[in-house]
Image 1 (cartoon, rainbow, N blue to C red):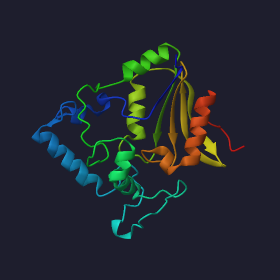
Image 2 (cartoon, one colour):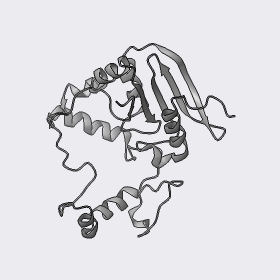
Image 3 (cartoon, rainbow, N blue to C red):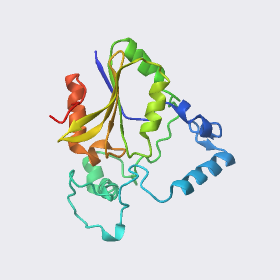
Length: 220
């Protein structure tokens, strides 16, 4: 039996109740009011990378074909490279995939997605399963605020108050410990795909999770 649960996702639609009143994300049927609110939201936050709100935007005219990229210097055009690669005929053949036009999250068409996994998390905690929930703190798609609202709805007592954790003498993020071995942690300077933006800090977080300890509380 697994005794760990690791999640980085939108944990509950309940914390987005306002827009859910008009937007049916389960069926994908959006009312005119929903479209109006979403358009207003897009206009308010402007033309940014929602997966990393402080990242530079991809300049497609400046892309260098064949760039190997680096985990130490995140390339905002990396999604374009992946899309191009996975749409190559030889790659699709090697993966034994049907010849298709691939795109990120394209045509998922979920019809059985639960509106919340909070009852599942609560059950895991009751069964003494170690649960860690994490967020990059510059991710606009699944922001830290949303994760904290979701966790607060569980009403699980805090045993280790919000504190910083460290890597290489810098704050790597923040962490809260809850009763029953549940942890909420953030990674400073990370967007949606945390290891892509902060690989070293992500490694510290994951290593701590696997060791069953919280990330370092000091610079030593």
